[in-house]
Length: 632
Image (cartoon, rainbow, N blue to C red):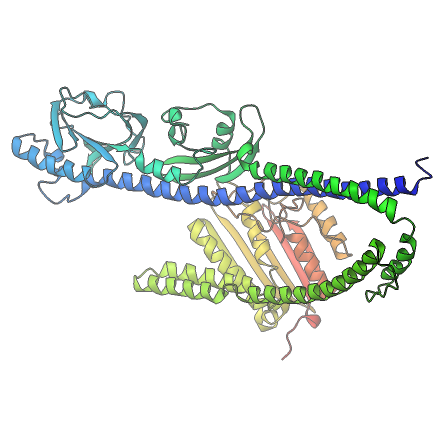
């Protein structure tokens, strides 16, 4: 009976046709909203944590600068430094000492108290809120001060309850939590310690920065030192403690200096964003915890609203389906015939209907709808054209690269004014590289420009490696210099020398670039004295280059955009300029260079690699002169 009933089949069809798209739309919207919220949260919080780390670094640097004020006015006979250097402790000296300690106390509103121990006089002084207390010995430092390995560095004592450094019967002794910097004082220029300056800082300044980085009700923020001690946190119970939470330890021992990760284990589920920074010989990490409940709260609200809309639409759809199935099954065919014309693309629909009931109204409504759709299509076309125009204008409004060039030139001029020509040379080299890289109007350039670009890159690297790096560039005459080649074919090969060719501990690294005419061809060679590659790897590279020469995809090319010789001239065991041929991470590598040469010179170009004796690696490029010489 269900199959024979048009009413039932129509009702079921309408319900399914309405319910499934709405349900699919809700699910897609929900998951898309979750994904968008996660990406936005990571981006915004990464920026916030990065800025917060900068602010905290500045705050800690200011604290450290205050501790260095002990060396202020070193030429003045009554300065704190000279008082410690003489080791006197009479009444007149103590008045001068009081003035110096009071100046330190007033240098920041976060300074709570200042303690000074004189090694020569074996006497301690403590200043709190303008009150000075003195006592023999240094019992107040026992168990709280550790001599730093680098004598110039201070010792940071983690947050702890404030105390009076063993001074008895002190009129005022606060009991809040403080962060202490212990600064050893040495006789200049010797390393004889003549005293210890300890400054207790209230955590208010650090907490103010932390409060700006998180939502107090839902998120948590932590600053830890390299020992895992919490300097400050939105959870006050953890200040001065070493929490063992797995997600905190994961952030702390992460190899990257900044980043984020998603945590889904017991105890916490959400996103963790962190930023590390180096300061005064120590590594600090700022961590922000964002729970999923807070992150996806809006997505859950959207889902509930969509479900409410779904139920409402479903009730309306049931009523409409029953009405349509009962009242409109008979005259619907005639209306359908008219609607079929829409499939032929005739949006100018003419419905011949004399009915004045709902079907007639529907017919006229469909006609109006088709006219509206036609108008909307034209409107959307105009909007799309306008959007394209706006996008073009937005692209044209981007920052002009000349601003960067002019800025670098200004820096170079200031360097010359201050008689620092090396900075001028480096900024000039960097400016040349940036101008060359950002010039998108040239896809092919004379070989001389490519040589100059590689030379500018080598000059910047030479600043890093000093006398350990030597290079030589030989350009064989104007014929070679005038050859046009695809842009960026030399610098990636030179960069691979630093990334893969030079092992740790090499006393001297050598790079040689030669370009000279060999018959009807131009021969370019880039060679280094690195580790080279294994024979098996060399054969594999030759096979890949041969496949590229016959139209291979070159998808294995990579590794040319690495981070150079980070931390020294170190590379992996692959060695040489071909060390990254199996790596897909880079975008400009050996195979990429070979592919672009083949596209520009058809099959007339050739790229080959080989190991050098006793060590080293060489890449040779051969291109035809008859296709490459610039017109006169």
